[in-house]
Length: 281
Length: 251
Image 1 (spheres, rainbow over the protein chains, first blue to last red):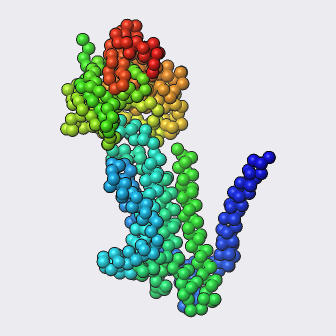
Image 2: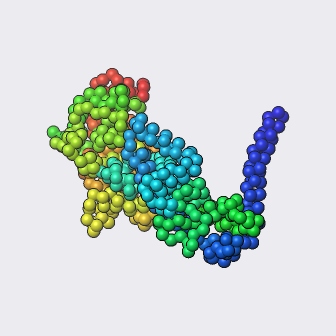
Image 3: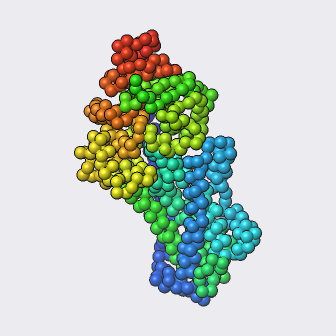
């Protein structure tokens, strides 16, 4: 009898915790969507902001975030995957590689504002790239690297050694094996990690704050060396820094909806990718 | 007198500080099946894997002594490890098809080794026939190889080794993960393979060793205890240890 009560108690705790988490998530989403959705119109998505942000749309911010994520991808994915491949496939397990690996894990925990300051010092000032789309993209790339390296390494670790032995025993070189067998096999895992990392990077504000984002850019972003607008920063400015906060509140909520939708889309894409590869193999 | 295709001389192998093989010298004659038997941990798989340099993968392994393939020194840095592995193929304990189609499992190594494109389909068909699996897979060559049964996968792995026309095929307990029917098929296949190839096989199954081998080598604690013809080992072993092991007193 006693154990039955115990089991019931554990059940209540587990279900209760789950319900509580879902409740918070539901409240947040309901608040944002109920206040933001009425403001989402084609004009809001496809027009430039007008009259000191109190009217018009957020096209430059959407465009800026997309371009920014693209630069982050181009920088972080090749380096991240190459680094993880080296660590997992080539590097012998010495003290140095363990230190490198531990450092990378630790970098993943560094607050994003630190990356912002580092990006300011390195890209904006030392490399003289100025506050620009390129500087901000590279800074976000640095932020993404540890995550991409870690998830790629995990994906490579999940590949059984028997597959490596099978390939090498056919007289195939290690490089060919990695290119033709290991990386294709690990691709779904790598892609999932990359997309989740990018969806996180797309929502970051602090790293781009000092490195290139602007509240308003005339004519929208377009070139690598100019400042740009981005959704998370736009949201931050509209919610806290605008002269007439009450007036732009609906626009802020609308921006939040667009940002969430973008991240949600990326996550759904990652999910489908994983599902597709899992059913294929 | 049979010609020896693989000669191992005074081989010592260490993993870290632990010595796994102790002064092993053994010759493998051409076009015969040689079984390596012995209790778990006696070093027979380690010996097998040293023949095509599979220990290169481990940073712990240290090898002393000489292994000759014909007159090629297997561990000479000047010799290409990929060429050696092409000539000394390997079949593993667990079937390990590549995550590709049945056809690609054989076509991929052929392409890597620069076989002319026009010859590939023919080579694949003959290797699959030689491995007694052609009839079962000829209609769905482009199906993923992992969908085959365990026994079929293992025969595909043998076909994948055979397609490169190696001279020696190393087999590391190829039947231990298979049911009796698949095991019988593989044994028949091994007996067929020795017409064209030299087979060295590690096995825990005494009956299997008796059914398929010409020579049997008994190993114990990293040493080669006795090496003789199959009949001599099973009917008239000279060493006490061999007699006890075959009699099932330990192992």
